[in-house]
Amino acid sequence: MSTETWVDALSADDLPTDDVTGVIVAGRDIAIYTVGSQVYATDNLCTHGHARLCDGFLDGHEIECPLHQGKFDVRSGQPACDPVTEPLRSYPVKIDGQRVYVRLAALSP
Ligand code: FES
Image (cartoon, rainbow, N blue to C red; front, top):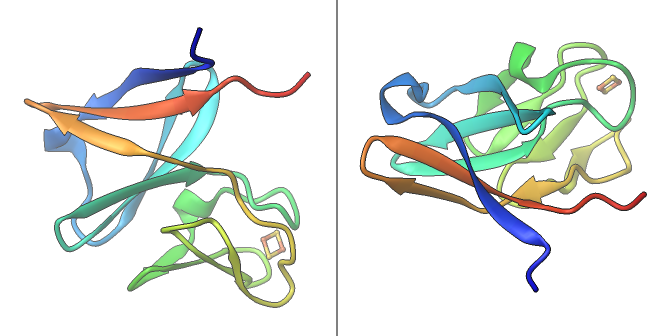
């Protein structure tokens, strides 16, 4: 049995344009990014400290944390510059009709 599930996250009408927004999906704080026609999703909390990336600045495929200006690649969640060293969890995204879905994996206990 699969441990991953597509979960309805938001309306396609609520997607930002070349920007980031934060949504709660199945109790998890998720950042949704659009870069051109592509949509990406990662955890919304920075791995360096207590900051929400949806309050940061999206520049191309990089999200800059609002607290210490660390950066992550939104395509993979990988750190792009100091002081962040731990990757963000990233999630597949699909659009079906007017809804945007994020595929969530079961979290480790
Ligand atoms: Fe995000 Fe420090 S809290 S870089």
